[in-house]
Image (cartoon, rainbow, N blue to C red; front, top):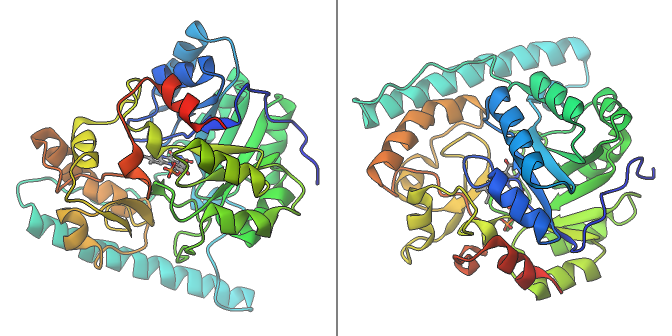
Length: 360
Ligand SMILES: Cc1cc2nc3c(=O)[nH]c(=O)nc-3n(C[C@H](O)[C@H](O)[C@H](O)COP(=O)(O)O)c2cc1C
């Protein structure tokens, strides 16, 4: 299936990745756009009103194209949680059983967090948290931003169609061949092919799936026949990396980690400290959110990696106050330091210089 809305033309084949939790600011999006790359706002975790304000802020200063990234809640995704039965009736029973098991596992994890930090209020999970998905869809549609990308799942075809009617190019993050085919069938105009070296959450469409360990150079050839353009993500830190990804069939690269220390990035002080601490190494963990994510291994990961259940966003909600307190104290052993395998290449510089250094 061919793309319905083409990717906006930019001078450089580079997307500055959406990075929720601070790094992606309107300043970074404007700097990326001015440097000839495509900047992305990260709507994840954000209140709808803040997303509206950020879009307006970018538009005030930059007239070119930019995008917004949304998290797809599990119940709105084309790839529903796997049902381990071929009988629909048993499938429902299985789903209910899994739901109960999730709640028990999350309650047990909450007890552990309460014991670990008795002076912090660990909330009970909000099982209805969908990250304001529908409100955010309304916002990006009304704003007619050039690009909307999705992660953690695949938007339903009617959602993609709605965005197409508003002239919006739709990208979906994929990590497997199966996800790529699902996304193209749903109408995606291009795919962000995210390898295991990528920083932050892996965009696996089912939270319980164990993510594969393939890098973008391994994944790209598996997807070149899906019929839409591919954007390579994971570990891109040099012009050579970009050249290799383009050579393997990508039309562009999406780089995140290498911009974490950019002057315009809103990366927290604790994360900046962690990124430059030579003692820390890279790992993939569910400890902070219940979803597999690549970051730096610190005390929190050592303590909770084996214990956190695969339940998102409940686990994320529970650990949030502990992370916030650690951030306030500048305690790099208690915060999530999301970064890809190429984190050592991140450097303090204007985003435009970093875009330059990624351009072949
Ligand atoms: C701190 C951080 C936050 C991220 N947040 C998001 C996000 O909100 N949405 C998303 O689609 N991807 C997110 N990602 C993943 C990026 O889109 C991209 O896949 C990744 O940065 C590419 O790998 P690299 O970090 O090695 O460059 C995040 C990555 C990092 C490092």
